[in-house]
Image 1 (tube, rainbow, N blue to C red):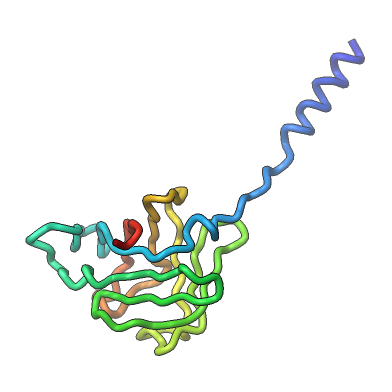
Image 2: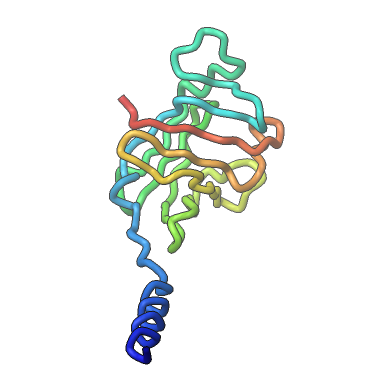
Length: 146
């Protein structure tokens, strides 16, 4: 009986260890373009659609192809350059030291990673409002750029 109780205790303790988080840097280290963009809850851009509210998102690119450099080209087509990193828990993408500084920022833009990234899709939600889009929280479905 003691052996069974001991085995159960060891199994419970061993099963409670946190699992190691595998970095996703290599998976998302490429150039991404917008497939769909929501400003707030409204879909304003879908790639290939003819009736987009904000057709400028055709210019959107998130270049993470270099480990030490990020280039964010927003819907206005103007690039901002800086560095990128992933939070230790793989939950946020952080763009820092951006120049020129995006409006209303200190040179940093962060996104929540809202779904597990794959080779084909990257789901992001901006953590702060974008002045370029009327102070909305924007959600992006990104795919590898052509």
